[in-house]
Amino acid sequence: MKFTNLLSLLALALMLAGCGEQAVSGVLLTGNLDNANGLDVFLDKASIGGANNVLTKAPIASDGSFELAFPEGLDPGIYQLRVGAQRAAIALNGRDGKVTVNGDVNGFSKYNFEVAGSADAATMVNTMKQLNSSRPTMKDIETIVDTVSNPMTAAFIAFNALSRAGGQGLEVHKKALGRLTAGSDFAEPYQKYVSNLEAMVAAQRSQERIQVGMPAPDIDLASPDGKKYKLSDLKGQVVLLDFWASWCGPCRRENPNVVKVYNKYKKDGFTIYSVSLDGMDPRRTAGMDANQLARANEGQKKRWVDAIQKDGLVWPYHVSELKKWSGQVSAEYGVRGIPKTFLIDREGMIAAVGLRGAVEIEQELKRVL
Image 1 (cartoon, rainbow, N blue to C red):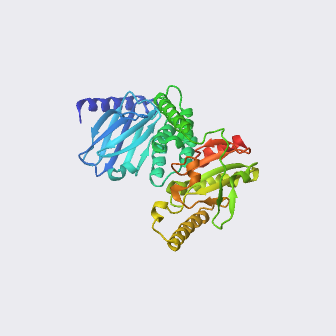
Image 2 (cartoon, one colour):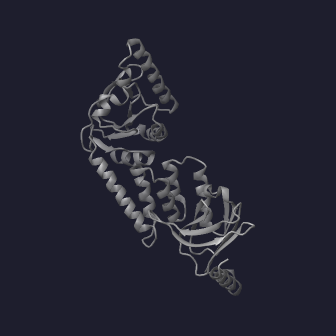
Image 3 (cartoon, rainbow, N blue to C red):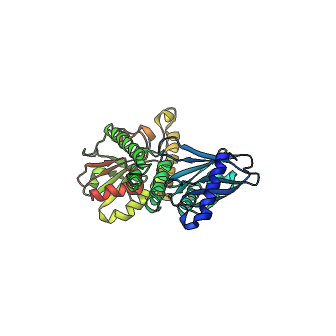
């Protein structure tokens, strides 16, 4: 052990012995990690959108034990413990004394360890353990943001969990940012991130072919049983126009959110008009005769119908051109990726574009209803 680190430990030990537990102002991180003999343990100060700051390191003894001492204490924040290629985040509130970490280094990045001595650290570890054992939805992350007691924990989890969600995570990011105090280390960089994300979303929406305030172009297509439904016939109701497909993984994961909102607001004059991009690309059907084309389309239609039933899409307005990306309707609406939604008000005007997740859909829907 380095001489300076030994002095720090001695100073902390004297402080603990002379003042008693209630007077502790320092922090001692200690623990035992199996299969970590010969490695070092690092403690970093975590950041939002920037590099972490390395604070200190210590060797792990042959029995797996380690100690990191901070006699002057640590600021409230999110910290990262690193051992070899394994790393895990913990939250500290600035009032923690002795915090203990016990587990196996091989499961460290998946938070397969126990932490004691800090309620905030335990909450962070337990929450991350749950997130690592499942595929969290946007609603799951929003629930964490709403319920965890430490605002920095909420911000850290939202920022990292939604890093690939782009504009779809904007509202959850705003919630997490709103919980941070002005003096928080995360406040300024998170505000910058959210502002950049808002600008990106605004730029994307400015290039949309269909803009808010425009009349919704009419659609007149057939359902799986051949019955035609016109979008304009739904005037007087608020309509979520939803472009999707049975083969689209993100669409299928989004469907439970759409169903949830439909069931909650259908009695208030809300419905959904679903346009499927199932079917055969004309480039693949060019060499088919009429019988081959009919069989191919029947297979595509079956997958479409099966997805409607499996996902519980119980509204009647399901239509498709069965031309995949070559349909005229998707081209007219400028659909370049799915799922893609357009909220249409009672007068047939576009009220919102690109809504995703039950929270975002419901927020705009209540405004229009």
